[in-house]
Image (cartoon, rainbow, N blue to C red; front, side, top):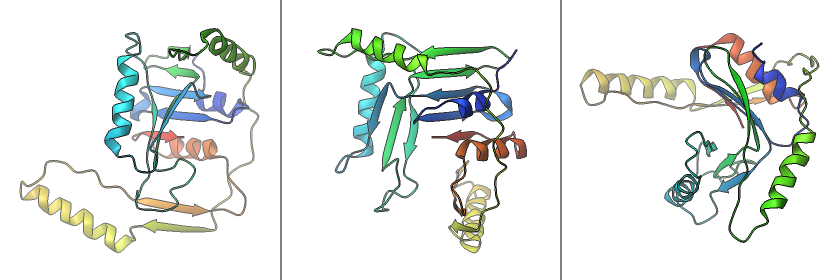
Length: 212
């Protein structure tokens, strides 16, 4: 039977959890752990991080399904971009992947580098595998409503920008432009991020969902 990826992810006792799903029930991936990590360090440009990612794919022994997950800060000028920093991409240790049609498979990523102990890398992965569970997650408390919401840009500015883009498309100056808007929600107690994703998926299946 198809496995509930989000429920599996909620059941894991892991510091790093990643989730990604395409719209309309397509590709879905839940992962734990970190096999490799790349971050945008102070003084580095976006091109530096993309170059490092490109080198990883070139040295992946032809693994076409190798995937790094991550992204960049919503506003790179922000002096406090949060725990993910200005930019961060990870290669998960374990991936539970669901494909259209109901098939599900699990993969383990191992990273072997020149001058590093390959046996130790395998032993770390085996030790991490011992902690993986396939028991369903216990039902957690329902999400409490947020105490405050902040939108950037605000409603008036957002509507103005959307209208400008629509006008440019009507004039033939653009074919497509994806706008982004940030919403910050404040809670009395820290919510479980994956529970929020569950709620979002119930509300709308026609968009991408992700949680890093």
